[in-house]
Structure formats: structure tokens, C-alpha cells
Length: 291
Image (cartoon, rainbow, N blue to C red; front, side):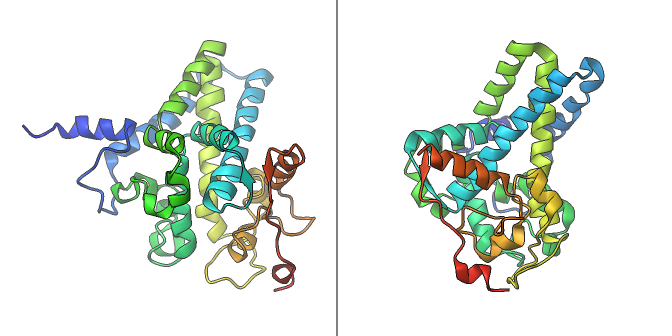
């Protein structure tokens, strides 16, 4: 008896090791859009629970902590290895990053490493110049072809079973966070602390794939259309200095100059001062002068 296709798709949501027959297709899997739509619809719960400064504060704190986990660790550590840290710290921020509902750390890093190798070419799965704005912003995530984790891209990370576990069951941590918020503060905490905070965080993160390759200035003549954008840099804790980043991806700093605000880098410097991370990779002087 062949497996029920709906059951198989549901299994695929909760266990990413399940193999899909559609993995080669660069098309939208409309079934996978259901959780995405659900997250957005639940934000409308604000009309039932209302707002208060307490709820806004909870949402902002969870936004800030998880944005730092995405920018500082999912991006600058897991994807680019721009500093060193211990295995417990690596695991801690993998968990925090996973709570952002942006998949697991290995999946995130594998796709990002591919992006840098093929940036703004037809092989870049989220280039707005080849696949359109919508696809670059969010559509590519719904494609069966982009759902699996390509472990060949992250052999340095795939050797850690705890990271592979988080990556395989990437809905587990977000569900635990949602349950914890509901237990602590009921529906208002769930709506503001999880749904609103996560959706805003998601779109600001995705704006680097889409808007930061369209809107802004180019200090460096790179082989892609990456842009520097102060507005996006403020929203994403420094990720908006995207042209800088594509010039020298290996640096822990994306705001290359003192006037380029990079909150993630300031946070990494704080962790380094506490000896929780080490070997922050600087921007070479030759790069700073090459424009």
C-alpha cells in the first residue's frame, strides 16, 4: 500500500529526514505554505488580546535575542565561521536560532554558503534579479528542491549530532517556545511573544535576500548586486551592510567603518570580552581601502 501523500507531507514538516519525491522541483509546494499563512493569520490575534507596553516589550526582547542568534551565529558563525566558540555555546545559540522559525542551523548555513558561491546568478536560489522579488524573499523556502539540508555543504557542522538533531526536528524548538509563552502569559504572550515577534523577525531576515540586493549603495565592485542599506542594517542588527559583507564574507564585522552601526558585532565583542567566543576575524586593511 502506497503511503498517504498528505500524511507524508505532514511527516516532512516535523522530521526533515523524510525523503520527498518532489525534491528536485523548483516550484511552490502549496501544502508547505499552510504553516507560513498560519503564522501570519495568528498575528491578527492582536485584535482580541489588545496591546500593552508589557506585551510590546516581550515581543521586542524575543525579537532582539533571536535576531542576534540568527545574525551572530546562524550567519556569521555557522555560515562563515568568523569566530570560534565552545560546543555548549554553539549548541545554545543553535537552539535560540531555531526558535526563530527559520529552520535548523545546518540547513540555514548550507543554503547561505551556496548563495555566496552563486550570488545573483541563475544558480542563486534567492536572487531577485533572476527569480523575482517574491521568490527571493520567501517563495524559495516553499520549494521542495530547497527543503532538504545539503550536508555536503556543511561537513564542519554535520559532525555534531546535537546540531543534526536540531536540524532534523526543526519545528520542535519553536513549538516549545510557543508552549512556554502560553504557559507564562496565556494567549497575549503567545500572540505577541511568538507569532508577531517571529513574523517580523522572519521578514526582516528575508529582506536581506531580497531588498539588500536591490535597494542601497554599492561601495565595492562585487560580482553581484549586493547593497549597503542603513535602514535594513538598523532593523537587522548590522546585516544591511550587505555589499560590505559580499566583499569580505569572512569578517565578524559587517559595518566595516565606525559610523556603520552593526549591533551584532557589538554583541559579539561583548561575548568576546567575557571569553565566551574567541578569534573574531577582522576586516583586512586591504579590503577597507579597496574602493
